[in-house]
Image (tube, rainbow, N blue to C red; front, side):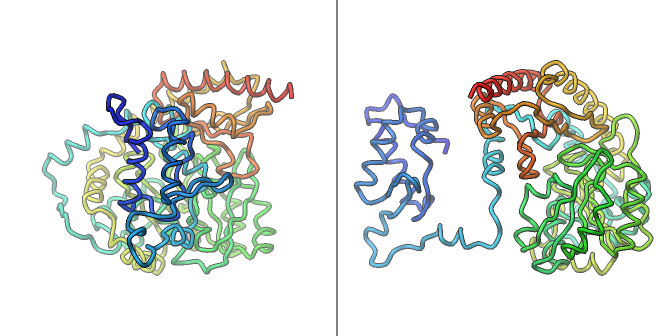
Length: 485
């Protein structure tokens, strides 16, 4: 809602708000059953006194368009068409509630909306800063000629052949021996997970994963009635000595892991732990989804080879992406798997979207084929390392008395544990009001309520400094309030 009442108009503010809401209802944008924003939220959005909003809503309730109660909030119960028609219009809210795909957690929905508000400092966002995206080079690629054929039509089910050739060559460089026929182009790793959830797993299955995990913050598996079973982590990654017991106890179908610069903890799985993971999963016949989106974002030393590089038995489904390294807007990722699996996932993808953007695939192939991607990675690593070091120093200066953390060797994230007692909900709301957007740990593990995922990848350096300094002040104030209760 970008609209605001006109303060210079002779029409009273409450009347302008009343007409605006009535228009939303009559156009069907707020269908019957829709719960409208609270009085306080509307007053803040319209920049008016709450009493002005109350007057407008009271009139609409009196006219039979809205119904309000203390528990359920205010909802649309009628519209102008309904007042004239013999039969009522459909209750779209009931359709929405009946959908089989789970909605995002309320906190995630709140974060997704707040990310695009003006003036917000995003301290938890898991993407590269616009300053680090190669916008100029991308424009040049589209302006220059290429030996790679360009099409704006559909691509074949597995994706652009030239792009798959380039990805296969790139993967050979990190130890993954594969061919273009074993690669499927997807619209980011998230789509790969969705295809796997509906194409390879039965409803009611269980999958093992690290706890905490990014996978808890989305409902791609839960919406297919698949249960997530979390395994504890330590400084070397997922605790492999728990796998056999959990697999048997939950009859798990596969294991999902982010072994390299884990989201949200930033943990890098050690080489011995990777070997142990592969040995146990091979013995158990437990397939692995390896999400390797952060692999190239190392700082001092390259990470160990992917799990897929040590996979003679085709145990691993390997996911890669350009979203974290090159451009989230390209929406280009890939799955490496045995050919029957690729054929199955490609068939489902064609039923869903008839293939990822041909333009994005062409651009991605150019970046890889010309060697530009590797050049860009050098720059991104340098900038992210600088940001990591800057953020760690800020934490040392401002958070030493209130939190603990480990310094990541790559990726985007610092997983900070608050050592003082504060209400995370209160901290989130207070920070947002001050223009700071947080990613609470409970998004990734319901038992991680005293954690924050701090990202040094997105905010500008001066925003990181201002945000972390003021966040520390808020935490200390809330801790003092909690202590004095």
